[in-house]
Image (cartoon, rainbow over all chains, first blue to last red; front, top):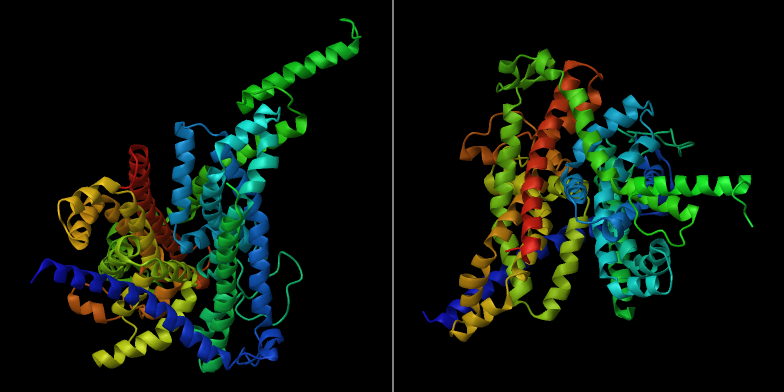
Length: 281
Length: 325
Protein backbone atom coordinates (compact mmCIF):
# COMPACT_ATOMS: atom_id res chain seq x y z
CA UNK A 1 0.00 0.00 0.00
CA UNK A 2 1.52 3.26 -0.97
CA UNK A 3 1.83 6.17 1.37
CA UNK A 4 -0.58 8.37 -0.52
CA UNK A 5 -3.25 5.78 0.06
CA UNK A 6 -2.40 5.81 3.74
CA UNK A 7 -2.90 9.53 3.68
CA UNK A 8 -6.27 9.18 1.98
CA UNK A 9 -7.44 6.62 4.50
CA UNK A 10 -6.11 8.70 7.38
CA UNK A 11 -7.91 11.81 6.20
CA UNK A 12 -11.08 9.82 5.64
CA UNK A 13 -10.94 8.60 9.25
CA UNK A 14 -10.46 12.16 10.49
CA UNK A 15 -13.40 13.39 8.43
CA UNK A 16 -15.59 10.57 9.69
CA UNK A 17 -14.69 11.36 13.30
CA UNK A 18 -15.63 14.98 12.78
CA UNK A 19 -18.93 13.87 11.27
CA UNK A 20 -19.48 11.46 14.18
CA UNK A 21 -19.04 14.41 16.55
CA UNK A 22 -21.28 16.82 14.68
CA UNK A 23 -24.06 14.61 13.32
CA UNK A 24 -25.51 13.63 16.73
CA UNK A 25 -25.70 17.32 17.69
CA UNK A 26 -27.84 18.00 14.64
CA UNK A 27 -29.91 14.88 15.30
CA UNK A 28 -30.61 15.89 18.92
CA UNK A 29 -31.62 19.39 17.91
CA UNK A 30 -33.63 18.12 14.95
CA UNK A 31 -35.62 15.54 16.91
CA UNK A 32 -36.40 17.98 19.71
CA UNK A 33 -37.52 20.62 17.21
CA UNK A 34 -39.76 18.24 15.26
CA UNK A 35 -41.32 16.56 18.28
CA UNK A 36 -41.52 19.69 20.37
CA UNK A 37 -43.07 21.90 17.72
CA UNK A 38 -46.35 19.96 18.06
CA UNK A 39 -46.76 21.03 21.67
CA UNK A 40 -45.99 24.69 21.12
CA UNK A 41 -49.03 26.93 21.25
CA UNK A 42 -49.98 30.28 22.71
CA UNK A 43 -51.41 28.56 25.77
CA UNK A 44 -48.37 26.34 26.25
CA UNK A 45 -46.05 29.32 26.48
CA UNK A 46 -48.22 31.88 28.22
CA UNK A 47 -50.51 29.65 30.26
CA UNK A 48 -50.37 28.39 33.81
CA UNK A 49 -50.01 24.64 34.35
CA UNK A 50 -52.93 22.74 35.84
CA UNK A 51 -54.02 19.14 36.46
CA UNK A 52 -50.65 18.44 38.06
CA UNK A 53 -48.75 19.96 35.13
CA UNK A 54 -50.31 17.55 32.62
CA UNK A 55 -52.26 20.36 31.01
CA UNK A 56 -51.89 24.08 30.50
CA UNK A 57 -48.65 25.91 29.94
CA UNK A 58 -45.19 26.37 31.32
CA UNK A 59 -45.29 30.15 31.74
CA UNK A 60 -44.13 30.18 35.38
CA UNK A 61 -41.11 28.05 34.48
CA UNK A 62 -40.17 30.37 31.61
CA UNK A 63 -40.53 33.44 33.82
CA UNK A 64 -38.55 31.69 36.55
CA UNK A 65 -35.66 30.90 34.26
CA UNK A 66 -35.64 34.44 32.83
CA UNK A 67 -35.65 35.91 36.35
CA UNK A 68 -32.84 33.63 37.46
CA UNK A 69 -30.78 34.51 34.40
CA UNK A 70 -31.29 38.26 34.80
CA UNK A 71 -30.56 38.04 38.52
CA UNK A 72 -27.39 36.06 37.83
CA UNK A 73 -26.30 38.71 35.34
CA UNK A 74 -26.88 41.50 37.87
CA UNK A 75 -24.88 39.70 40.53
CA UNK A 76 -22.09 38.25 38.42
CA UNK A 77 -21.26 41.01 35.90
CA UNK A 78 -19.96 43.69 38.31
CA UNK A 79 -17.82 41.22 40.24
CA UNK A 80 -16.66 39.46 37.09
CA UNK A 81 -15.69 42.62 35.22
CA UNK A 82 -13.96 44.11 38.27
CA UNK A 83 -12.05 40.89 38.78
CA UNK A 84 -11.01 40.89 35.13
CA UNK A 85 -9.89 44.52 35.20
CA UNK A 86 -7.83 43.78 38.27
CA UNK A 87 -6.20 40.72 36.72
CA UNK A 88 -5.36 42.23 33.36
CA UNK A 89 -4.75 45.91 34.23
CA UNK A 90 -3.52 46.08 37.81
CA UNK A 91 -2.12 42.77 38.99
CA UNK A 92 1.56 42.08 38.62
CA UNK A 93 2.83 38.55 38.22
CA UNK A 94 3.11 37.63 41.88
CA UNK A 95 2.20 34.44 43.68
CA UNK A 96 -1.05 36.10 44.78
CA UNK A 97 -2.04 36.71 41.16
CA UNK A 98 -1.20 33.13 40.34
CA UNK A 99 -3.36 32.04 43.27
CA UNK A 100 -6.24 34.04 41.80
CA UNK A 101 -5.80 32.33 38.45
CA UNK A 102 -5.73 28.92 40.10
CA UNK A 103 -8.89 29.85 41.97
CA UNK A 104 -10.59 30.78 38.70
CA UNK A 105 -9.58 27.53 37.03
CA UNK A 106 -10.87 25.65 40.05
CA UNK A 107 -14.16 27.50 40.21
CA UNK A 108 -14.64 26.61 36.56
CA UNK A 109 -13.99 22.94 37.27
CA UNK A 110 -16.14 22.46 40.36
CA UNK A 111 -19.10 20.19 39.52
CA UNK A 112 -22.43 21.97 39.31
CA UNK A 113 -23.95 19.71 41.95
CA UNK A 114 -21.25 20.83 44.40
CA UNK A 115 -22.34 24.42 43.74
CA UNK A 116 -25.82 23.23 44.64
CA UNK A 117 -24.57 21.80 47.94
CA UNK A 118 -22.62 24.97 48.65
CA UNK A 119 -25.65 27.16 47.94
CA UNK A 120 -27.77 24.99 50.19
CA UNK A 121 -25.18 25.13 52.97
CA UNK A 122 -24.40 28.84 52.90
CA UNK A 123 -27.34 30.75 51.42
CA UNK A 124 -30.36 28.60 52.19
CA UNK A 125 -29.41 27.36 55.66
CA UNK A 126 -26.54 29.41 57.13
CA UNK A 127 -27.75 32.83 55.93
CA UNK A 128 -31.41 31.84 56.36
CA UNK A 129 -32.49 32.91 52.90
CA UNK A 130 -34.54 29.75 52.59
CA UNK A 131 -35.24 28.16 49.24
CA UNK A 132 -35.49 31.41 47.32
CA UNK A 133 -34.68 33.25 44.10
CA UNK A 134 -31.98 35.14 45.97
CA UNK A 135 -30.21 31.96 47.10
CA UNK A 136 -30.40 30.47 43.60
CA UNK A 137 -29.19 33.63 41.89
CA UNK A 138 -26.17 33.95 44.19
CA UNK A 139 -25.27 30.28 43.67
CA UNK A 140 -25.55 30.61 39.89
CA UNK A 141 -23.60 33.87 39.94
CA UNK A 142 -20.59 32.29 41.65
CA UNK A 143 -20.76 29.44 39.14
CA UNK A 144 -20.84 31.87 36.19
CA UNK A 145 -18.02 34.05 37.48
CA UNK A 146 -15.05 32.05 36.10
CA UNK A 147 -16.58 31.96 32.61
CA UNK A 148 -17.12 35.72 32.59
CA UNK A 149 -13.63 36.42 33.93
CA UNK A 150 -11.71 34.15 31.58
CA UNK A 151 -13.52 35.34 28.43
CA UNK A 152 -13.41 39.01 29.45
CA UNK A 153 -9.73 38.81 30.22
CA UNK A 154 -9.08 37.67 26.69
CA UNK A 155 -11.03 40.69 25.45
CA UNK A 156 -9.05 43.11 27.63
CA UNK A 157 -5.75 41.59 26.59
CA UNK A 158 -6.67 41.99 22.94
CA UNK A 159 -6.75 45.78 23.38
CA UNK A 160 -3.32 46.95 22.16
CA UNK A 161 -0.90 48.26 24.77
CA UNK A 162 -0.47 51.51 22.77
CA UNK A 163 -4.04 52.52 23.65
CA UNK A 164 -3.08 52.58 27.30
CA UNK A 165 0.22 54.36 26.82
CA UNK A 166 -1.37 57.03 24.62
CA UNK A 167 -4.06 57.60 27.23
CA UNK A 168 -1.39 57.94 29.92
CA UNK A 169 0.72 60.26 27.77
CA UNK A 170 -2.25 62.61 27.42
CA UNK A 171 -2.34 62.91 31.18
CA UNK A 172 -5.06 60.36 31.90
CA UNK A 173 -4.86 58.34 35.09
CA UNK A 174 -4.84 54.60 34.88
CA UNK A 175 -8.50 54.37 35.79
CA UNK A 176 -9.44 57.01 33.21
CA UNK A 177 -7.60 55.01 30.60
CA UNK A 178 -9.43 51.87 31.60
CA UNK A 179 -12.86 53.45 31.76
CA UNK A 180 -12.67 55.57 28.63
CA UNK A 181 -10.43 53.51 26.37
CA UNK A 182 -9.84 49.90 27.39
CA UNK A 183 -13.30 48.90 28.62
CA UNK A 184 -15.22 50.40 25.66
CA UNK A 185 -12.88 48.69 23.22
CA UNK A 186 -13.19 45.37 25.05
CA UNK A 187 -16.95 45.64 25.60
CA UNK A 188 -18.04 43.36 22.71
CA UNK A 189 -15.76 40.62 24.00
CA UNK A 190 -17.00 41.07 27.54
CA UNK A 191 -20.61 40.94 26.38
CA UNK A 192 -20.12 37.73 24.40
CA UNK A 193 -18.30 36.14 27.33
CA UNK A 194 -21.07 37.14 29.68
CA UNK A 195 -23.74 35.74 27.38
CA UNK A 196 -21.87 32.44 27.19
CA UNK A 197 -21.64 32.31 30.98
CA UNK A 198 -25.31 33.18 31.45
CA UNK A 199 -26.29 30.55 28.91
CA UNK A 200 -24.76 27.95 31.17
CA UNK A 201 -26.56 29.39 34.16
CA UNK A 202 -29.89 29.35 32.32
CA UNK A 203 -29.57 25.68 31.44
CA UNK A 204 -28.20 24.33 34.72
CA UNK A 205 -30.37 22.18 36.92
CA UNK A 206 -28.07 20.86 39.63
CA UNK A 207 -27.24 24.20 41.33
CA UNK A 208 -30.90 25.24 41.57
CA UNK A 209 -32.14 21.84 42.70
CA UNK A 210 -31.95 22.63 46.42
CA UNK A 211 -31.62 26.40 46.34
CA UNK A 212 -34.60 27.76 44.41
CA UNK A 213 -36.53 25.34 42.25
CA UNK A 214 -40.16 24.64 43.00
CA UNK A 215 -41.69 21.34 41.94
CA UNK A 216 -45.09 22.78 41.10
CA UNK A 217 -46.00 26.41 41.69
CA UNK A 218 -48.64 27.69 39.28
CA UNK A 219 -48.20 31.39 40.01
CA UNK A 220 -45.61 34.06 39.43
CA UNK A 221 -43.11 34.95 42.17
CA UNK A 222 -43.87 38.01 44.31
CA UNK A 223 -40.49 38.72 45.92
CA UNK A 224 -36.84 37.63 45.79
CA UNK A 225 -37.57 35.31 48.69
CA UNK A 226 -40.10 33.27 46.73
CA UNK A 227 -39.41 29.95 45.12
CA UNK A 228 -39.88 29.70 41.37
CA UNK A 229 -40.26 26.98 38.81
CA UNK A 230 -37.41 26.87 36.32
CA UNK A 231 -37.34 25.33 32.84
CA UNK A 232 -34.44 22.86 33.32
CA UNK A 233 -35.76 21.60 36.63
CA UNK A 234 -39.27 21.47 35.22
CA UNK A 235 -38.05 19.33 32.33
CA UNK A 236 -36.32 17.01 34.79
CA UNK A 237 -39.44 16.76 36.94
CA UNK A 238 -41.92 16.07 34.16
CA UNK A 239 -39.68 13.54 32.45
CA UNK A 240 -38.73 11.52 35.52
CA UNK A 241 -40.91 12.31 38.53
CA UNK A 242 -44.44 12.56 37.17
CA UNK A 243 -45.94 9.34 35.84
CA UNK A 244 -48.24 9.55 32.83
CA UNK A 245 -46.92 12.85 31.59
CA UNK A 246 -47.87 13.40 27.92
CA UNK A 247 -44.74 13.01 25.81
CA UNK A 248 -45.56 16.08 23.71
CA UNK A 249 -45.51 18.32 26.79
CA UNK A 250 -42.06 16.96 27.66
CA UNK A 251 -40.69 17.57 24.19
CA UNK A 252 -42.32 21.01 24.14
CA UNK A 253 -40.59 21.99 27.37
CA UNK A 254 -37.27 20.68 26.07
CA UNK A 255 -37.77 22.70 22.89
CA UNK A 256 -38.49 25.95 24.73
CA UNK A 257 -35.39 25.49 26.86
CA UNK A 258 -33.30 24.61 23.82
CA UNK A 259 -34.55 27.65 21.88
CA UNK A 260 -33.74 29.92 24.80
CA UNK A 261 -30.19 28.57 25.07
CA UNK A 262 -29.58 28.43 21.31
CA UNK A 263 -30.74 31.99 20.79
CA UNK A 264 -28.30 33.18 23.44
CA UNK A 265 -25.60 31.13 21.74
CA UNK A 266 -26.38 32.58 18.31
CA UNK A 267 -26.53 36.10 19.74
CA UNK A 268 -23.05 35.66 21.19
CA UNK A 269 -21.64 34.26 17.94
CA UNK A 270 -23.19 36.97 15.77
CA UNK A 271 -22.05 39.74 18.11
CA UNK A 272 -18.55 38.38 18.14
CA UNK A 273 -18.15 38.10 14.38
CA UNK A 274 -19.85 41.47 13.84
CA UNK A 275 -17.48 43.31 16.13
CA UNK A 276 -14.49 41.39 14.91
CA UNK A 277 -15.19 42.58 11.38
CA UNK A 278 -15.80 46.14 12.49
CA UNK A 279 -12.68 46.35 14.60
CA UNK A 280 -10.22 48.97 13.37
CA UNK A 281 -7.09 47.55 14.98
CA UNK B 1 -3.02 81.77 50.96
CA UNK B 2 -2.86 79.09 53.58
CA UNK B 3 -0.82 80.10 56.57
CA UNK B 4 0.81 77.34 58.59
CA UNK B 5 -1.42 78.06 61.54
CA UNK B 6 -4.82 78.04 59.81
CA UNK B 7 -7.14 75.06 60.29
CA UNK B 8 -7.40 74.73 56.51
CA UNK B 9 -3.73 73.94 56.34
CA UNK B 10 -3.99 71.34 59.08
CA UNK B 11 -6.92 69.74 57.31
CA UNK B 12 -5.09 69.44 54.00
CA UNK B 13 -2.03 68.00 55.72
CA UNK B 14 -4.23 65.48 57.50
CA UNK B 15 -5.86 64.61 54.19
CA UNK B 16 -2.51 64.17 52.51
CA UNK B 17 -1.25 61.82 55.19
CA UNK B 18 -4.45 59.82 55.16
CA UNK B 19 -4.37 59.58 51.39
CA UNK B 20 -0.80 58.41 51.35
CA UNK B 21 -1.55 55.85 54.05
CA UNK B 22 -4.58 54.48 52.20
CA UNK B 23 -2.67 54.44 48.96
CA UNK B 24 -0.01 52.37 50.57
CA UNK B 25 -2.67 49.91 51.73
CA UNK B 26 -4.10 49.76 48.25
CA UNK B 27 -0.62 49.31 46.84
CA UNK B 28 -0.95 51.87 44.08
CA UNK B 29 2.13 53.63 42.76
CA UNK B 30 0.84 56.54 40.72
CA UNK B 31 -0.32 59.59 42.57
CA UNK B 32 -0.82 62.26 39.95
CA UNK B 33 -4.32 63.60 39.45
CA UNK B 34 -6.19 60.92 41.26
CA UNK B 35 -9.50 61.80 42.82
CA UNK B 36 -11.21 60.21 45.77
CA UNK B 37 -13.86 58.49 43.67
CA UNK B 38 -11.12 56.99 41.57
CA UNK B 39 -9.37 55.79 44.68
CA UNK B 40 -12.54 54.10 45.92
CA UNK B 41 -13.11 52.45 42.53
CA UNK B 42 -9.56 51.15 42.26
CA UNK B 43 -9.63 49.79 45.79
CA UNK B 44 -12.88 47.94 45.21
CA UNK B 45 -11.51 46.51 41.98
CA UNK B 46 -8.56 45.17 43.94
CA UNK B 47 -10.80 43.67 46.58
CA UNK B 48 -13.10 42.08 43.97
CA UNK B 49 -10.05 40.74 42.17
CA UNK B 50 -9.33 38.60 45.17
CA UNK B 51 -12.95 37.49 45.60
CA UNK B 52 -12.47 34.33 43.53
CA UNK B 53 -10.00 32.98 46.07
CA UNK B 54 -12.53 33.77 48.77
CA UNK B 55 -15.24 31.84 46.93
CA UNK B 56 -13.12 28.72 46.54
CA UNK B 57 -12.25 28.82 50.24
CA UNK B 58 -15.88 29.45 51.20
CA UNK B 59 -17.08 26.51 49.11
CA UNK B 60 -14.52 24.20 50.68
CA UNK B 61 -15.28 25.49 54.17
CA UNK B 62 -19.02 24.96 53.86
CA UNK B 63 -18.60 21.48 52.39
CA UNK B 64 -16.34 20.56 55.30
CA UNK B 65 -18.68 22.14 57.83
CA UNK B 66 -21.67 20.13 56.64
CA UNK B 67 -19.86 17.00 55.53
CA UNK B 68 -17.09 16.22 58.02
CA UNK B 69 -19.43 15.12 60.85
CA UNK B 70 -20.14 11.96 58.85
CA UNK B 71 -16.64 10.75 59.74
CA UNK B 72 -17.55 10.29 63.39
CA UNK B 73 -21.22 9.52 62.89
CA UNK B 74 -20.59 6.53 60.66
CA UNK B 75 -17.93 3.88 61.26
CA UNK B 76 -15.13 3.74 58.66
CA UNK B 77 -16.01 0.14 57.81
CA UNK B 78 -19.53 1.22 56.94
CA UNK B 79 -18.42 4.39 55.12
CA UNK B 80 -16.07 2.56 52.79
CA UNK B 81 -18.27 -0.50 52.52
CA UNK B 82 -19.99 -1.80 49.43
CA UNK B 83 -23.60 -1.11 50.37
CA UNK B 84 -25.30 2.28 49.97
CA UNK B 85 -28.71 1.95 51.60
CA UNK B 86 -29.20 5.13 53.64
CA UNK B 87 -32.62 4.04 54.94
CA UNK B 88 -30.91 1.08 56.62
CA UNK B 89 -27.98 3.20 57.82
CA UNK B 90 -25.62 1.69 55.24
CA UNK B 91 -23.46 4.49 53.88
CA UNK B 92 -20.92 2.56 51.80
CA UNK B 93 -19.58 5.07 49.28
CA UNK B 94 -17.51 2.53 47.36
CA UNK B 95 -20.16 1.61 44.77
CA UNK B 96 -20.80 5.29 44.11
CA UNK B 97 -17.12 6.16 43.72
CA UNK B 98 -16.58 3.15 41.46
CA UNK B 99 -19.76 3.99 39.56
CA UNK B 100 -18.48 7.49 38.82
CA UNK B 101 -15.05 6.16 37.87
CA UNK B 102 -16.51 3.44 35.65
CA UNK B 103 -18.79 5.74 33.68
CA UNK B 104 -16.08 8.42 33.40
CA UNK B 105 -13.44 6.05 32.10
CA UNK B 106 -15.88 4.54 29.61
CA UNK B 107 -16.84 8.03 28.45
CA UNK B 108 -13.23 9.05 27.96
CA UNK B 109 -12.49 5.87 25.99
CA UNK B 110 -15.20 6.99 23.56
CA UNK B 111 -14.40 10.69 23.61
CA UNK B 112 -10.60 10.57 23.37
CA UNK B 113 -10.23 9.15 19.84
CA UNK B 114 -13.21 11.13 18.54
CA UNK B 115 -12.07 14.35 20.17
CA UNK B 116 -8.44 14.16 19.16
CA UNK B 117 -9.31 13.14 15.61
CA UNK B 118 -11.74 16.04 15.34
CA UNK B 119 -9.19 18.48 16.73
CA UNK B 120 -6.60 17.23 14.24
CA UNK B 121 -9.17 17.51 11.45
CA UNK B 122 -10.09 21.07 12.40
CA UNK B 123 -6.50 22.23 12.82
CA UNK B 124 -4.63 20.31 10.15
CA UNK B 125 -6.81 18.70 7.55
CA UNK B 126 -10.10 20.53 7.07
CA UNK B 127 -10.95 23.00 4.36
CA UNK B 128 -11.94 26.43 5.66
CA UNK B 129 -15.66 26.01 5.08
CA UNK B 130 -15.73 22.81 7.15
CA UNK B 131 -14.05 24.61 10.01
CA UNK B 132 -16.61 27.41 9.83
CA UNK B 133 -19.38 24.84 10.29
CA UNK B 134 -17.65 22.61 12.85
CA UNK B 135 -16.53 25.17 15.40
CA UNK B 136 -19.89 26.87 16.03
CA UNK B 137 -21.63 23.48 16.19
CA UNK B 138 -19.21 22.27 18.83
CA UNK B 139 -19.88 25.46 20.73
CA UNK B 140 -23.61 24.73 20.47
CA UNK B 141 -22.97 21.26 21.90
CA UNK B 142 -21.15 22.84 24.84
CA UNK B 143 -24.19 25.01 25.45
CA UNK B 144 -26.95 22.37 25.31
CA UNK B 145 -28.22 22.00 28.89
CA UNK B 146 -27.35 18.64 30.40
CA UNK B 147 -30.99 18.06 31.31
CA UNK B 148 -31.93 18.32 27.63
CA UNK B 149 -29.27 15.77 26.69
CA UNK B 150 -30.45 13.56 29.53
CA UNK B 151 -34.01 13.87 28.27
CA UNK B 152 -32.87 12.92 24.77
CA UNK B 153 -30.89 10.02 26.25
CA UNK B 154 -33.96 8.72 28.06
CA UNK B 155 -36.29 8.92 25.10
CA UNK B 156 -34.07 8.12 22.13
CA UNK B 157 -30.72 6.67 23.16
CA UNK B 158 -31.88 4.33 25.94
CA UNK B 159 -34.54 2.58 23.81
CA UNK B 160 -31.93 2.18 21.07
CA UNK B 161 -29.49 0.58 23.51
CA UNK B 162 -32.23 -1.67 24.88
CA UNK B 163 -33.32 -2.88 21.46
CA UNK B 164 -29.87 -3.52 20.05
CA UNK B 165 -28.72 -5.40 23.14
CA UNK B 166 -32.04 -7.07 23.83
CA UNK B 167 -31.50 -5.99 27.44
CA UNK B 168 -34.22 -5.54 30.08
CA UNK B 169 -33.41 -1.83 30.32
CA UNK B 170 -31.63 0.78 28.24
CA UNK B 171 -30.71 2.80 31.32
CA UNK B 172 -27.16 1.51 31.64
CA UNK B 173 -23.64 2.67 32.36
CA UNK B 174 -23.01 2.53 28.60
CA UNK B 175 -25.86 4.95 27.82
CA UNK B 176 -24.48 7.34 30.41
CA UNK B 177 -20.96 6.98 29.04
CA UNK B 178 -22.08 7.87 25.50
CA UNK B 179 -23.85 11.01 26.71
CA UNK B 180 -20.90 11.95 28.93
CA UNK B 181 -18.50 11.43 26.04
CA UNK B 182 -20.39 14.00 23.97
CA UNK B 183 -20.60 16.38 26.89
CA UNK B 184 -16.83 16.27 27.43
CA UNK B 185 -16.02 16.51 23.72
CA UNK B 186 -16.12 20.34 23.52
CA UNK B 187 -13.56 20.55 26.33
CA UNK B 188 -11.32 17.86 24.86
CA UNK B 189 -11.48 19.31 21.36
CA UNK B 190 -10.68 22.87 22.35
CA UNK B 191 -7.76 21.96 24.64
CA UNK B 192 -6.36 19.51 22.07
CA UNK B 193 -6.68 22.20 19.41
CA UNK B 194 -4.63 24.59 21.52
CA UNK B 195 -2.02 21.89 21.94
CA UNK B 196 -1.79 21.26 18.19
CA UNK B 197 -1.77 24.97 17.53
CA UNK B 198 1.31 25.48 19.67
CA UNK B 199 3.43 22.95 17.79
CA UNK B 200 6.00 25.17 16.01
CA UNK B 201 5.56 25.60 12.29
CA UNK B 202 9.16 24.57 11.57
CA UNK B 203 8.41 21.04 12.83
CA UNK B 204 5.86 20.74 10.05
CA UNK B 205 8.08 22.45 7.50
CA UNK B 206 11.01 20.22 8.38
CA UNK B 207 8.94 17.04 8.07
CA UNK B 208 7.45 18.13 4.74
CA UNK B 209 10.88 19.14 3.45
CA UNK B 210 12.14 15.66 4.25
CA UNK B 211 9.54 14.32 1.84
CA UNK B 212 6.93 13.21 4.35
CA UNK B 213 3.33 13.33 3.23
CA UNK B 214 0.90 15.59 5.02
CA UNK B 215 -0.52 12.59 6.86
CA UNK B 216 2.91 11.37 7.94
CA UNK B 217 3.67 14.85 9.22
CA UNK B 218 0.47 14.94 11.25
CA UNK B 219 0.65 11.40 12.56
CA UNK B 220 4.35 11.06 13.29
CA UNK B 221 5.42 14.63 14.06
CA UNK B 222 2.63 17.01 15.04
CA UNK B 223 0.47 14.72 17.20
CA UNK B 224 3.42 13.23 19.13
CA UNK B 225 4.78 16.74 19.70
CA UNK B 226 1.44 17.76 21.18
CA UNK B 227 0.98 14.68 23.34
CA UNK B 228 1.29 16.33 26.74
CA UNK B 229 -1.28 18.92 25.73
CA UNK B 230 -3.52 16.11 24.55
CA UNK B 231 -3.05 14.34 27.89
CA UNK B 232 -4.24 17.51 29.55
CA UNK B 233 -7.26 17.63 27.27
CA UNK B 234 -8.14 14.15 28.49
CA UNK B 235 -7.73 15.17 32.13
CA UNK B 236 -9.93 18.22 31.79
CA UNK B 237 -12.48 16.12 29.92
CA UNK B 238 -12.48 13.66 32.81
CA UNK B 239 -12.97 16.49 35.27
CA UNK B 240 -15.99 17.57 33.27
CA UNK B 241 -17.36 14.02 33.09
CA UNK B 242 -16.97 13.22 36.79
CA UNK B 243 -18.91 16.31 37.79
CA UNK B 244 -21.75 15.91 35.33
CA UNK B 245 -25.02 15.35 37.13
CA UNK B 246 -28.39 15.57 35.43
CA UNK B 247 -27.76 13.66 32.22
CA UNK B 248 -26.07 10.86 34.13
CA UNK B 249 -28.81 10.67 36.69
CA UNK B 250 -31.48 10.43 34.00
CA UNK B 251 -29.92 7.66 31.92
CA UNK B 252 -27.80 5.37 34.11
CA UNK B 253 -30.60 3.68 36.04
CA UNK B 254 -29.18 4.62 39.44
CA UNK B 255 -28.76 1.20 41.01
CA UNK B 256 -26.07 1.41 43.69
CA UNK B 257 -24.19 -1.76 42.83
CA UNK B 258 -20.50 -2.46 42.42
CA UNK B 259 -19.52 -2.21 38.75
CA UNK B 260 -16.70 -4.74 38.75
CA UNK B 261 -16.85 -6.52 35.41
CA UNK B 262 -16.99 -5.57 31.77
CA UNK B 263 -20.58 -6.79 31.77
CA UNK B 264 -21.49 -4.01 34.20
CA UNK B 265 -21.19 -1.69 31.26
CA UNK B 266 -24.64 -2.79 30.17
CA UNK B 267 -26.22 -2.68 33.60
CA UNK B 268 -27.43 0.25 35.68
CA UNK B 269 -24.91 2.07 37.86
CA UNK B 270 -25.13 4.98 40.22
CA UNK B 271 -22.66 7.84 40.34
CA UNK B 272 -21.72 10.17 43.20
CA UNK B 273 -23.29 13.21 41.54
CA UNK B 274 -26.56 11.42 40.81
CA UNK B 275 -26.77 10.22 44.43
CA UNK B 276 -26.44 13.73 45.82
CA UNK B 277 -28.90 15.18 43.32
CA UNK B 278 -31.50 12.46 43.84
CA UNK B 279 -31.36 12.19 47.62
CA UNK B 280 -30.59 15.66 48.95
CA UNK B 281 -34.14 16.87 48.40
CA UNK B 282 -35.55 14.28 50.76
CA UNK B 283 -33.19 14.35 53.74
CA UNK B 284 -33.59 16.39 56.89
CA UNK B 285 -30.79 18.90 57.27
CA UNK B 286 -28.39 17.86 60.01
CA UNK B 287 -29.16 14.13 59.73
CA UNK B 288 -26.50 11.49 59.17
CA UNK B 289 -27.69 11.02 55.59
CA UNK B 290 -27.41 14.79 55.00
CA UNK B 291 -23.84 14.80 56.28
CA UNK B 292 -23.02 11.76 54.14
CA UNK B 293 -24.24 13.53 50.99
CA UNK B 294 -22.07 16.55 51.80
CA UNK B 295 -19.26 14.07 52.37
CA UNK B 296 -19.71 12.93 48.77
CA UNK B 297 -19.57 16.60 47.83
CA UNK B 298 -16.17 16.85 49.56
CA UNK B 299 -14.89 13.88 47.56
CA UNK B 300 -16.08 15.46 44.31
CA UNK B 301 -14.56 18.82 45.23
CA UNK B 302 -11.17 17.32 46.06
CA UNK B 303 -11.12 15.15 42.92
CA UNK B 304 -11.85 18.04 40.58
CA UNK B 305 -9.53 20.30 42.59
CA UNK B 306 -6.60 17.93 42.00
CA UNK B 307 -7.42 17.52 38.31
CA UNK B 308 -7.63 21.28 37.80
CA UNK B 309 -4.53 22.13 39.81
CA UNK B 310 -2.46 19.65 37.81
CA UNK B 311 -3.89 20.82 34.48
CA UNK B 312 -3.59 24.50 35.39
CA UNK B 313 0.00 24.25 36.57
CA UNK B 314 0.86 22.46 33.33
CA UNK B 315 -0.85 25.25 31.37
CA UNK B 316 0.97 27.99 33.28
CA UNK B 317 4.33 26.30 32.93
CA UNK B 318 3.93 25.68 29.21
CA UNK B 319 2.60 29.15 28.62
CA UNK B 320 5.76 30.63 30.03
CA UNK B 321 7.83 28.39 27.78
CA UNK B 322 5.59 29.23 24.86
CA UNK B 323 2.77 26.92 24.02
CA UNK B 324 0.94 23.82 25.10
CA UNK B 325 3.30 21.13 23.98
